[in-house]
Image (cartoon, rainbow, N blue to C red; front, side):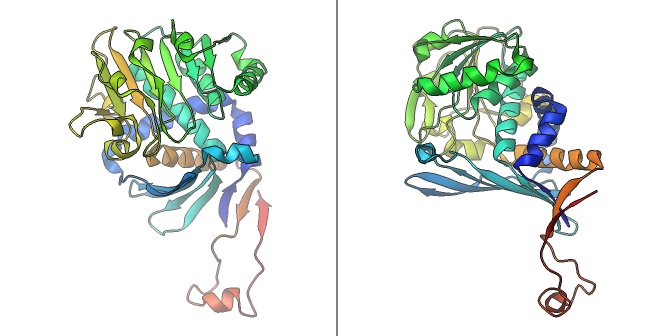
Length: 356
């Protein structure tokens, strides 16, 4: 039997720990894995693009555990009452090839994206950053707000979205979250107004196009930019001149993938960037002066999903109570008799059950 985590299970696990605490624990796991970057097998994700979206596979392994994620991105889905992003993933034992965990990753991807954003900001943003502009108030926004409040001590969010209903939704959800009781929410009328006075600017928009959300006049010395939305070819959020600004330093997760999908797809191959693994391992120092502009060009990388799946598997082991399993792999008395042990007269019916 293989451990199984569905949506109700991730709700239970996160609520037991607390959303902010869960994101913080996940950020530490991601940091730990980025510090052992060289142990991982790395590749850009395998993407199948269509006119309306993308479906991707994201695999990686450290030689002991293997993981992959299936994820889609379809920005127009919300018009039909569907999610823009859905995902699931598998964690497996390399020594046997057997899957250990089959898990939902729709909610978990939102958690790990926010955890990675806040982790990068801990290393890149100026000390004492307390005000963040949040541009794009859709499905990722609450997770970013909780992560930056928990890990960086953000005390004011300046909100903007072209859809006022999205901002109203975000305000409603954040005000109903007890751990954010001291968080000031300021609704703004434009991106420029949201950025004014911000220490950190997070962009998390969904349109699949070369958008220009941030331009150089909106950027003040010392800002940290957390660019989350540009995550596929032809989809960006920053004007290319923002990346060229004096004192601007760009950090990416995995450079070969970011060259295809990130903000730096706009830049020539010789444009210099630093990988996050070099930052968290101390090999590279990006912010040399308080006035430097740091940019985290985040597209999401398979290592972060590996970290999330490994943490979820650990949490199930810690529970030592009831959790769901699924008969994803046959259990045979004779491993050479697949037919007899499944479709033959001695085969058992498929089932999903609670154990523990």
